[in-house]
Image 1 (cartoon, helix red, strand yellow):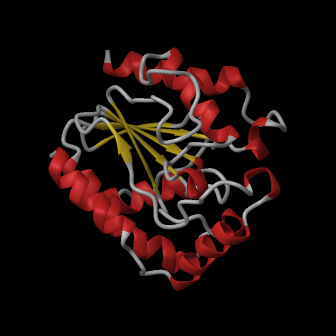
Image 2 (cartoon, helix red, strand yellow; image 1 turned 30 degrees about the vertical axis):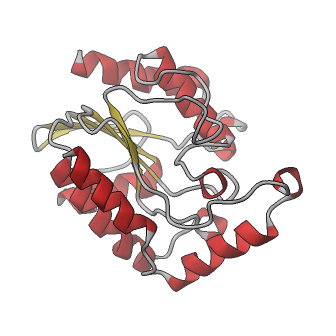
Length: 219
């Protein structure tokens, strides 16, 4: 399983199916932002990562332009990554409570992180065709990750992408929504983006409770 996931990730990193996204991530990597001007950006599709035997699968939206697209690891190098690592560490899924770089020592236990789209999209808004192109990778992961018992979908886009890949219809997104489907538990949460966390739409207590629920389910 681990070898097949590595092969799939290698294919992802070479993907050129979406010209708009390929151009955008390269452009961001060249222009950068002032605070990261001295860093070399990853600037290509991101692989998924984590424990191949995971019982928890986390499905996000897409890499952040100056987060994952810079660091080369999903949910790494930005506020969303720190919120995720902190909650996962508090509930025993992550080795440290921060996610800053690919070599920061963060490892995941019993959890695997993927996304609906593997390249940072302009404005965090992938096109329907880009979501469709990338769906093959999520579908392949669902077949390979045989031990998954809980799927945590972050944001409506992540939720809808998982539902399409898993062939689920008629499920409504909402923070805290829970469905028992195909032998798995599907949980939905607002995405830990600054847009949600800075405005209080997603509070720390709401966010942590999601992961406590995951732990209760798989313990």
